[in-house]
Length: 420
Image 1 (cartoon, rainbow, N blue to C red):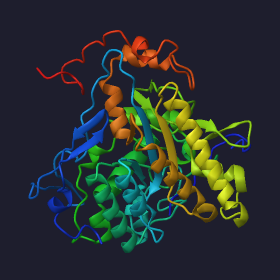
Image 2: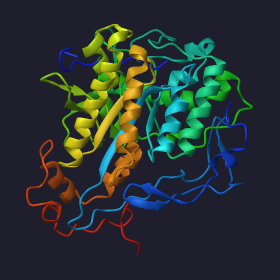
Image 3: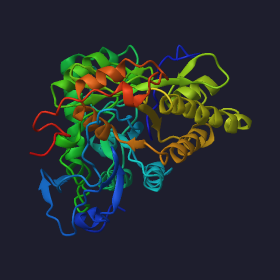
Image 4: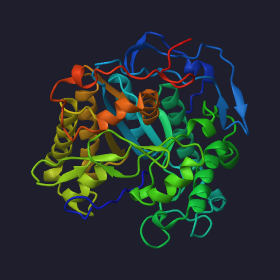
C-alpha cells in the first residue's frame, strides 16, 4: 500500500475500535519514559466527553494521552538521544504492518510518527473529489482505497494516536518526477494539496459511507503539524506553504547527523546520512534507499541475499545511532514504508533497531511532535551551541563543561517555562 520513495544518494545518484472512544482512550497512569526521563502519562479518564467535529469523522477528546511535557536542559546537562521512527504513506492493508509496528512501539517504550496518505481515507468511487495540482481530477500514483482498507486504516490511526503516536501526512497522490511532480508545484498548489489531505481525513465517514464507526479522536486541523513530501521532492515551496498553514516541522530533505535548525519557520527534521557497511559512501536512513542500492529497481531481488541486505540496513542504522549516542547526541531520524520489499528484510532490520536502541539509558524514541515540542522548549543559545558540534563529535571538555552556562528562562507560555 505504501508509496515508494525515491532520491539520489550514494550509488544511485539515488475492526475499528468497536468500543466507545473513551474506552479506547483509558489506560494506566503509571510512569512513562517521556521526552526527558520518567514522567506521568496524560491519559483520558473513562467516560470522558467526546465532541464530534464536522460529520463525525474526527472528534475532540482532550489532550493526547502519553504526550509528556518537555523540559529545558539544565546547566551542564547532557542532552537525551532522540530517535524518530517514521512511516511514509501509513495505512493498514493485508500485510498488517501498521498494527504490527504499533505493538513493537508499545513493547519497546517508543512513540512513532505515522504519515497518513489522505487518499487512503478516500474510496475509489469518490476519487474525483481529489483535484491534484497539474493532474486530472481523480488521478493518483498510489491509487485509492476500499471500505475494508478505510475501516482498517481508521482503526490503526485511532489506536496509534491514543497510544501517544503522531499522525502526520504524506499528502495525497504521490506524484514524482518532471511531469507534474510535486517538485514543480507552486506554493499555492501545495496549499491546495495540504487542504485536501486534511479534508479527506476530516470527511472519511461521509465519503466512505462508514458512518457507524468510531471517529478519529483528534481535531486534525490542530493535530497535523508536519509531514514528508513524496520522493523528498518539492521541499522549498512546500515549506513556504506549510509555514503559512500552521505546520511546525518538515522531514522532506537529507541532512548530516547534526542538530536541526529552522527553515521558513519550520524545524527541518529531515532524514540523515549514516554509514553503509561495505561501502565508502553513506546512505540515507530509509528502507527504499537501502533497497535501491542493493537490488536496484527490483523490489524482490535475490532471496539468497535477503539476510545480508537486512543486516546491512540494521548495522548501518546502528552505526549512525552509536555515532550520535557517543558523540554529539544529534537526533536520529529514520524513515520507512509499510512494504515487504526483498522478503520483508527491511522491516526486520527496523524492528531489530527499535529493540536495541529504545530501551537504552538516555534514549528517547519519540514522534516528530514530541521532538518539536522539546526543541521549542530549549534555550536558543543552547541549541546554537549544540549545532556547532560536527557529526559524531562529543564535546572535548565533556558535557557538563560544554553546557555549563545557565540557560535563559523560557518566556511565559512557551513549553517548558517554569510555573508561576
